Image 1 (cartoon, rainbow, N blue to C red):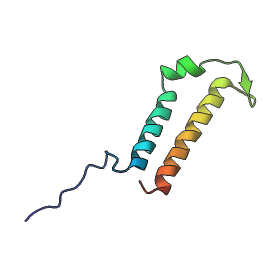
Image 2 (image 1 turned 120 degrees about the vertical axis):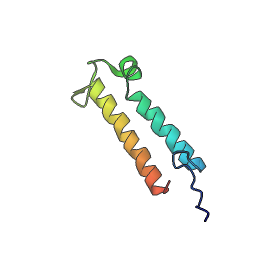
Image 3 (image 1 turned 90 degrees about the horizontal axis):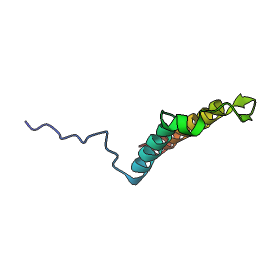
Image 4 (image 1 turned 45 degrees about the vertical axis):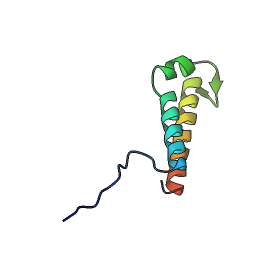
Length: 76
């Protein structure tokens, strides 16, 4: 009895999947040390009543969520 061969689910199969994966990993790298410390580790200036670091992290995490919505919408 032959068992069906299944593809690896960690490798994106489409161009949209590769774009979504690259965008997600790039954005996630912006939220992790050491890149976070180089780009956004400062208290001044204040944006929207918050220190720059909090506003920066909010924007990066919002972009990560948008990439996940994109991937869900495209059924990747």
